[in-house]
Length: 427
Ligand code: NAD
Picture 1 (spheres, helix red, strand yellow):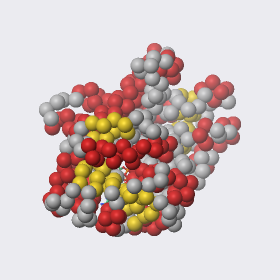
Picture 2 (picture 1 turned 90 degrees about the vertical axis):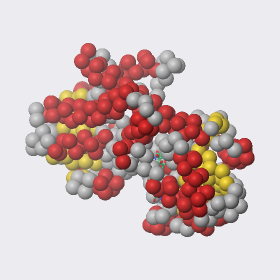
Picture 3 (picture 1 turned 180 degrees about the vertical axis):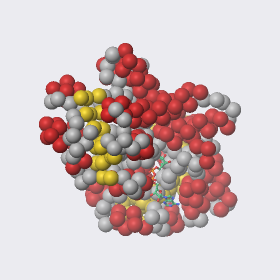
Picture 4 (picture 1 turned 135 degrees about the vertical axis):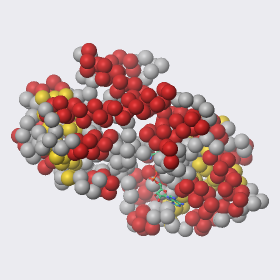
């Protein structure tokens, strides 16, 4: 099938590249010319495992990139909207980019097309996009479908290619049939429902996962007080198939470009429909406090922060991505610096993005350099390379053998055996 993907960010680039690899003809569109130039040179614009290989295999054949929305839409039967829907006023999803994309799509409408809302958009957005297109392309035949994306950064290609389910929200049998055909090669369960339910499924899923994270973080904080180990507790809980092992890892709090903004947007959807979502409010409050708790742990270990030097490993909101949007690491570093600490940070992939929003951040060229004369090593993202360091050498470089592992990614026993004072979360 001929497909246009409007917005080649984390979701659009992965979606377009994977669909091309599945045998469809894809044109990726972005308004940022530098991005498109880079992609046309075969260079990926984000860090995502497996993506460079897929791009290399399909570029110039079934996959092309342009800044020209009109031509891309004109050529296509299916048009994906994958632009950002960031946090807007009062936590509402900012639909400005999606509306802009819909207006541009409308101007290139000729025959029947399916417009797919793949970005995370609030309930009612399928109707909104329909209205925007209708205003500009009256009489043209089209369907707007909600098809939320569930991929995770860090394993986005695998997640796209092997989804647990594909959700299609539409009242049109014709569109549902074409979407089913599009995704046929993935052999994944297809859940076809009405647009409002599809839109709600995305927000409800993210809010539920965020709830699991805040729940286990709250349990971790109790574990610390009663001398239990949250890793053992989570393992024992996870064996219950009604609970499962996933998303029960305590840490510095959830972050990233989705959970915080989607929880807030759902709060807003609830509020405007007259429902007070106390539960989700609590989930977000636990999350905010968790970051503050991490900073307090550092402060307590060091007996104050003024003039203390902290080596911070990890800036991305989780391992295997370069994304720092709403990263707990950056928030914790901000608190530490505000209270007088000196922080030297390192991340294998996310430093450039971090410096773009935190220009004064002191970064080092590698993990080892960040450690020199540090009073404490603060691990905030569980990159494999951090777990595999020679901790004897790490200890030699530091002023004091203090580690706060906010990801519980090191083995406390072996680290303590090397002479470190080690603290994790909930252990
Ligand atoms: P992003 O910021 O990485 O990418 C958005 C891209 O759209 C940018 O490159 C921007 O230049 C481009 N763009 C904006 N307006 C445009 C226009 N009119 N024409 C062409 N290009 C335009 O965002 P993202 O992380 O890929 O997220 C996109 C959507 O997918 C959001 O709604 C997000 O909530 C949702 N989502 C994200 C993830 C994730 O892990 N990042 C997962 C699932 C769903």
